[in-house]
Length: 334
Ligand SMILES: [Zn+2]
Image 1 (cartoon, rainbow, N blue to C red):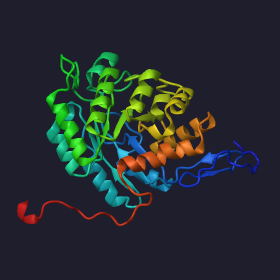
Image 2: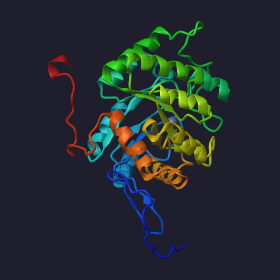
Image 3: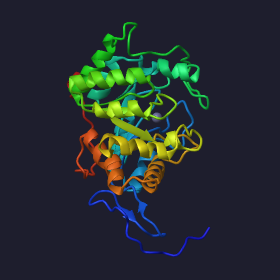
Image 4: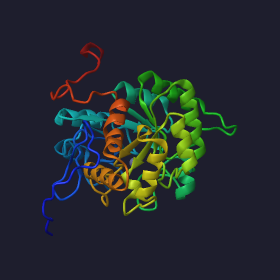
């Protein structure tokens, strides 16, 4: 393969800060400087993965990224992130917990522990959500990949009367108390709208509607606009448009962002699957794709830098590149 001649062109929409573009091969090329991936899937995991926590974080660092958030359907990633952080001090590495069967479903004790140990994101059920089970024929996996022994009808956040279950309300309280991010994951469109309304009333600012055009939840455009209007962030993942999954085309993501505004949107990789690029590259390809299909450089910067910085509550530049010291109870209490 040969590269074309270098042609100097003016980037059509060069952001003032943050996101960089260059034109080495004849057109604006987004790079990942300062980018943040709020959602990737490293190994260890019950599904096959393309890289582990450390290799994914190192690749993110080497591409100039600012932070990554590790996600696992099967366990908390908070301690995993802590250990990787100590080895990769140049970027921020965070974890969270997905409320699937493996942690006792919607379990406030597990949420509290994850948040007190430094977790940034509480994710509602994914592969063990009732809606996931309906749409995928069972819990615990997808058509293409299956993991643990959990096979059930899945869990719902609303009871028969349409009220939130008590444990879900407890999770809302913990999220508010810790100023954490709440992701809606594989809940049904009805549950997602209910959560966004409830959290808006409670003043919870950091709700992300996970991959809106994935098979679950596959929101329609009206619902996308409604949840954005209520203050939630639409978190679009590369995995949704990737060749192996292709639940939506990039143009649909572009249309949604144009309708609700980049200020209410996020781009994430949602990768780690072996048939997808590693997260840092998936995020670059995703950003570049929607850029070429009509979003501005400033929009991309908002979605992969500005909004994630605000959600994580971190400054633009990492304050220290020293590995964090262990924290915890003093020895006499151990
Ligand atoms: Zn995911």
